[in-house]
Image 1 (cartoon, helix red, strand yellow):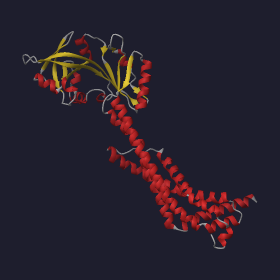
Image 2 (image 1 turned 30 degrees about the vertical axis):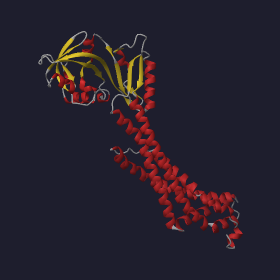
Image 3 (image 1 turned 30 degrees about the horizontal axis):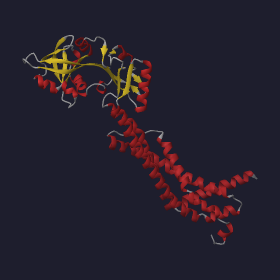
Image 4 (image 1 turned 90 degrees about the vertical axis):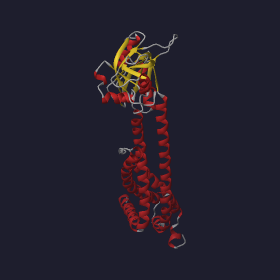
Length: 394
């Protein structure tokens, strides 16, 4: 008995499915088109949202250091850091390689021996950096000059900013004399390209030479780090670092980390609202089509109820039908949407978005959910009386 009932239910289910695909192909196409378009836009925007986080992290890394490490303040003011701490800073985080550089700052007198009386005060920057992406932690102009020249191949060189070189009437290759509080030094000059920033008034030399000029051996003023990741991951890195090195004080450089978080939050918010709006419009479109379906299925429902079918079982059949529509539309639309996001990523970020596999099942699941919700008009079928249907009154 149970086997016969199960066979009957299965036959009725496939009859409904055949009527879905054959009764009104035009309306079926409209519903599949609406669900597919909704799935495509949803998948594209979700993929862009995930890729935007990666792109923003990459783009903001080009702006320079995002973490400052300095000495803890004491009652007598600040003190210098030991250079050994620089080597203890982890060169990797959970998100990838970390770029780092150590700096020692001080005011010196800079003199052009070839021009009598040409002596000015300037900020001297002694620095040392890790080999991983130095342009993320030192002046962009200096990093570029290191790549284009042999600045690092000789101890007898210093890099001079454009405004300072102009004030001293220096040309590339001229000798310059640097007079510190503890010693003096003469070097051959490299001229840095103008940046419009403080680098134009500074002199850059090796860290150990700056330590000698200032009389602070094995000391640094601060350490700057570029840590990959979002603001939360950067903060976690800082907290782990301070647990390991309690004598230092670390904090994120706010204008970078906060800007990154705000921009991503706004992009994410806009994309989420857009996805929600697209799904609502898709549901309304499919719901309008389902209203017509409900009108046309009165005879089927009356027949099923007349032969003993319960309201719950009848509605379940139609919900499964809606879910199948959502599955077909979602599978096709989500695949198209992921390919669409590649082109949108190139248009927005200049680089094609990377397809994320997690987006596909999420977009398909959302489309199925929308299709099921859109079947709400079918609730009217539960109130149909078989006798009224057969007499033509319903």
